Length: 170
Image (tube, rainbow, N blue to C red):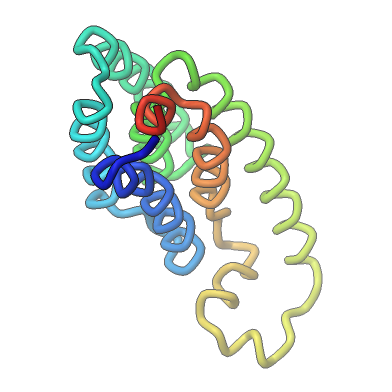
């Protein structure tokens, strides 16, 4: 049963994911501050949830592995730098146990988002929507895809099955 302290702790990750998605949608940026908050809160909440230090270490290894691969993807121009950092910081919360599910969901949701956006961009944007800066930017075919939306949605799908969440609700 969640307590006065654990209930707010359970909400931190979903709130940060919502912020990541909305920030990427509205600005096409994922801030370093957000990534640092994800990392910092992971350690605070993992300690609160009673994760053993050895397991926290394995979560760090998983996140570093994802960071190495995602920065290779960034170097090839396949994803943005903010996306690479967000993928790694989110993987820190899941460790090896949830990482595969997270990456699979992110890939599927990101593919669906990309295909949907490409389809919508084929049609002209109504004048009323063209005046809304973030919608006009999103509709521009020269603009990338706000993949942070898919990354955040995947994180929200996996979070309830994560060890850290399970320990907080126990």
